[in-house]
Image 1 (cartoon, rainbow, N blue to C red):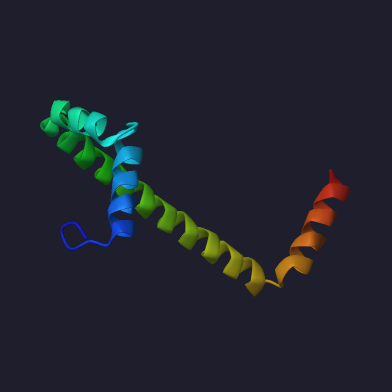
Image 2 (cartoon, helix red, strand yellow; image 1 turned 180 degrees about the horizontal axis):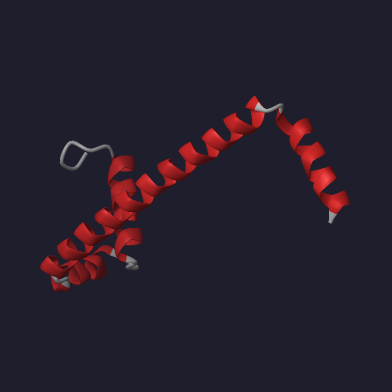
Length: 93
């Protein structure tokens, strides 16, 4: 075992690195990481985290609004009542 890791864990870690860097082997991955602009990557990470948090908050807000709308529809009689309203709306147009 290298570094206290089981061989399977080392292979998994290597595979994850290669996929993340999109490199065919570890020497190419190491070269890519050495050439990477750390500050630019950190700035991009900060921006992406902020965007993710905004999108996640928006998703939660939309889900809450949807749930509230469903609750309101069910409070007035659910799907059958809405179907009746839609049917009347279609016949009056």
